[in-house]
Image (cartoon, rainbow, N blue to C red; front, side):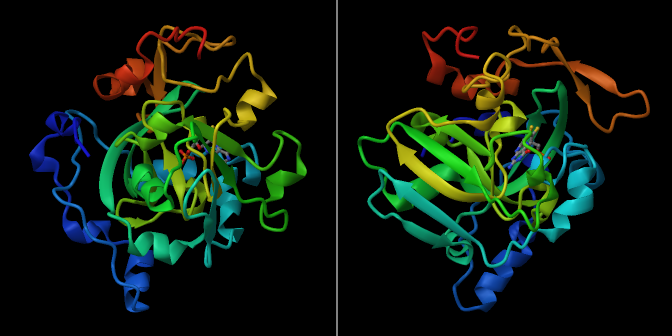
Amino acid sequence: MARTWTSKFKDHHVTDKSLYLNRRQLMAGAAGLGLGSIAGPAMAAPEGLEPNPLEDITNYNNYYEFGTGKTDPARYADALTTEPWTVKIDGLVDNPGDYQMEDILAKAQIEERIYRLRCVEAWSMVIPWNGFTLGSLLERAGVQSGAKYVAFETATRPEEMPGLRYPVLDWPYREGLRLDEAMHPLTILATGIYGEDIPNQNGAPLRLVVPWKYGFKYIKSIVRITLQEEQPFTSWNDANAREYGFYSNVNPTVDHPRWSQATERVIGSGLFGSRRETDMFNGYGEEVADLYAGMDLKANY
Ligand code: MTE
């Protein structure tokens, strides 16, 4: 697959290979399943993209299954059992079935991707993810020609997720992408942060990362991936269609009905914080603008 974005990355920021190996992968190896092959050269940070400390990334979260407060996930998500973990892949695929997490990892090419996460609530941080392309998993599943969209579902575990008691959203949390967005090389399934297993509050053991879209598209703790012809049901669009669209591409020129999207608060930038101007497609326009050629991005927010 063409790696059109590499030109933006500086080579001096290349991460040591050992950092990609998270604990789960090492365990998969120890169990005789073999390590996932290691991709190289590593993805490095674009000019000026300095990752936030792990403390910011793991203590300021949105994961409503554990409560709506920003610190609720850090407080309660430890209760989530992430081993064993199974992802059902179904719908319009040649190889439907229950994919075991160890098996997914054993066959994955884990890379580091340092991306800015821009939340629809107008804040952002920079996260050094470890993960693999969603496209590589979909290729394993064998996408059939009738498939136009990919639907995702989060686990629902009432005994482990106290937030499910509140009907904030129509659980399970569901998200979706158009197939070309899902197959785009920037779209990954993250399994780690800073070279360690992804913490529960960040969506262990497997969560979607689509860097040019608002963070609510980055569905956490995925248990089901369905290839289908129709545009999928998505939780936030269902909760408030006027405020949250299906596309949700980061766009400083299309405001949320209740606030501006022109700038964003930078998490971890001191007591009073600082703001930066929001970039079109969160700075990834060179790579993804073509996906939306000719589309009215105000109507398709
Ligand atoms: N996934 C699930 N299952 N539940 C959620 O509440 N919140 C979303 C997204 N994925 C959410 C979710 C929102 S609004 C954002 S901004 C990101 O996760 C936050 O990711 P982070 O906590 O890793 O920064």
